[in-house]
Length: 399
Image 1 (cartoon, rainbow, N blue to C red):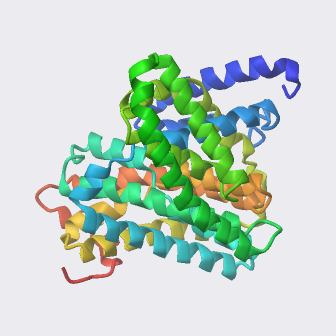
Image 2: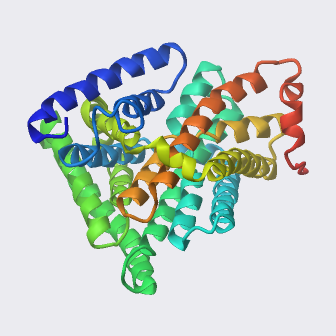
């Protein structure tokens, strides 16, 4: 099915299989992103080998990840972050710093190249907002103090992760790293200020004079243009520009209307192609080359995120039980980790075995998060006894 003439059939197969898997996954509590990745694993080189990634399909996948990060920017809730700003910031810092150092430590321990080592650290910093929110909603804890802190910290975590990704990308080019970092540091604030001035002036006029579909077209064009500028002018990943475009448009009257339309456009076609394409890129045969790397990556991914976020919550004056909830709730990696891993693979700085290990780590943490959250929050009368052995391994910090 690699021929161009078969592209339509490939797309039909991916969309139908992806949506069916998502529906079945939701019925058993499996996040839709994981279900779509499993479709890619099943029909791709990792299993049946019906479809391979590349060509036009890869281009559609790229648009999908740009729209995904654009939506992440549109859905950033500044009010939520302000309500628990101090604890959330402490949680996010702990949840980024310790996993990044853990990933770097793994890279050095296994003798990986410097860029691969940095990418491992960047991959481990991510947190999935959507998966955490879905799990908390099912548990009835979305509006709790711990739930609000998780959502706010996850947003800050994503911002910090994207900054780290931009930094890592600046070191992968062939030019002078100092020049590359200088371009990045100059581009990010200048692009944000310029974009805010332009969106602030044009946003209300576009909202008042253009039809809804025209507003959506302009917003998508802005995301694509800023994604291009980020990659070609700023020397950073295209997803950085897309996320920034979402932040900017969210502050205009276009934000709510664009978000609604973009969810239809993105999640009905482009975003599913991205997640399925992630599975298509994985070849688990390569995992046998470094099985201990896979084990180490999963272990460090779980421990570093839980402990780092737990410590941040305690420093933010959360109790022990709430802090464990926050730590577990921040453990799931999800789409951001996959974005970073795929970006490293496409840039040629991450090998297939590392990418496949990152996919398996993402699947593992995504599946563990709702299970451990239910175990920990299931005993309302004795919450601290639910995971006593797990909690005993965490650092005891004074409030």
